[in-house]
Amino acid sequence: MTHPVRVRFAPSPTGDPHVGNIRTAVFTWLFARHHGGAFVVRVEDTDRARSVQGAVEAILQSLRWLGLNWDEGPDIGGPFAPYVQSQRLDLYRQAAHDLIGSGDAYKCYCSPQRLADLRQRQTRQNRDTGYDRRCRDLDAPPMPEDASQTPVVRFRMPQDGSTAVDDLIRGRVTFENRLAEDFVLLKSDGYPTYHLANVVDDHSMRISHVLRAEEWLPSTPRHTHIYKALGWTPPKFAHLPIILAQDRSKLSKRHGAASFLEYPRQGYLPDAMLNFLTLLGWSLDDKTEILSRKELVHHFTIDRVNRSASIFNRDKLLWTNGSYLRSMTPEALADALLEYWRAYPTPQIPNTPRRGLLARIAPLIAERIKTLDQAAPLIHFFFRDEIDYETEDLIQKGMDRAVTCTALERTLELMTAAQPFDADTLEAALRPLAKELGLKPGQLFGSIRVAASGLRVAPPLFESLEILGRERALSSIGKAVERLRSPAVDSPPGR
Ligand code: GLU
Image (tube, rainbow, N blue to C red; front, side):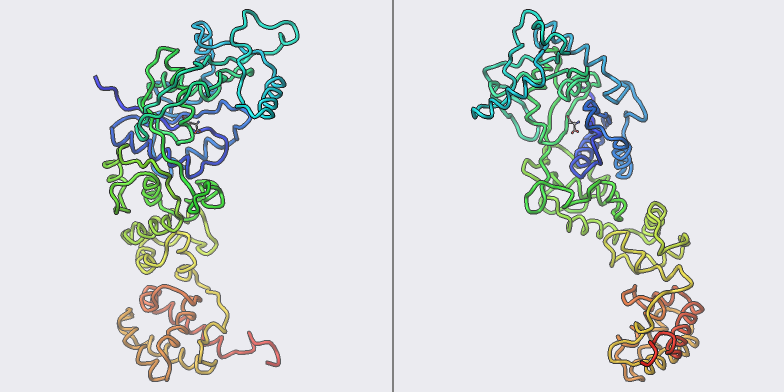
């Protein structure tokens, strides 16, 4: 009988999720969906000192935004609930008790002070640091001075030989047992360590495959021994390559967003982000950069995961996002913008634009933006009655106030006459006007652009005018003419 695929994402709520955490979630989710298995979310909050309020919600929100749906988890429950380790303490205590019973674990009464002194001595003598196994073979608890100390429970690790870990990505990795100390399973506060809780839960939740970051590989031989001592079959392991910054330093807040939730705010698309994160350590071949969610699920297998470090390249992320934006239909881009502005309101777009109008505008900027947050500064004038600019901005290089005024007056005449009021007709009328006035097209169009949009850099002019419509275009340009005619308004006295 083949066992169903069950995988888990097991974050520790110690702070805001970062790219590395979420990449693990992405790979785990893709693996589950590729194999038609279950994706489980489990909160590993046994380190009470490091748990941070709100961290679980930030993690779940990141998963939701990326569209990584889970089948069992802290919020929705499931057959192996609860999915929060601090609510499962009895299970870990029972396992520790069993391990003591079988002689695979023992109580250790050493005080934190003794352990600190020991470590100091070992460091001074240039020896490997680690627990010296003083309590390993005690017949009875030491008396009397340490008797009040609540003991921890330590695992009895073998002292010679080696432990092999078969990793689906790295192959067989061997660890020398003599380097392994008798690590703690249960702390004196009654909480388990990561090692114990992780093993107990992966077993009790019937996890078939563990996908996790490479930094956990050195912990795996410990886990292997716990499984063996409890008579359990371990899951299969796949340790995902580390993610480095472009200069190959450790990825830090400096390189990416401090919190993963900054990406939605910065205007990245979930599908583009999913695509980008999957390529951090996985590839289909040596050239394919864009894969849809469906394609990723279809192709995702562990044998395509790299062993070497992945490099986080922010330009590539921008490029990927830009490429998704360009390939969207106008309606889809309009919807993405509306959703973005709903989630992150901007004063530049004070009222919700009409979807139909936005879908006409969207194609004008699809080529120019790489993230959704770049849209509002380019198109806000479509949605506002009053536009804001300095009168001087109307006057292009090589022009003066009078010439600009005449040019815009003539523009008003031609625009009033244009029939129909569309991009082609307007261009056909206004190009010759530049010539007639002895201006370069760029000069005339620059003035019109500022008059109509308030912007020096804006979407293509004639298409924008067409979408603004005759009435609004005439009104904005009329206002620009008025400004130019009344120099007193902006010029300092005596100029
Ligand atoms: N709680 C661990 C973490 O935050 C999980 C490691 C594992 O998946 O075993 O990374």
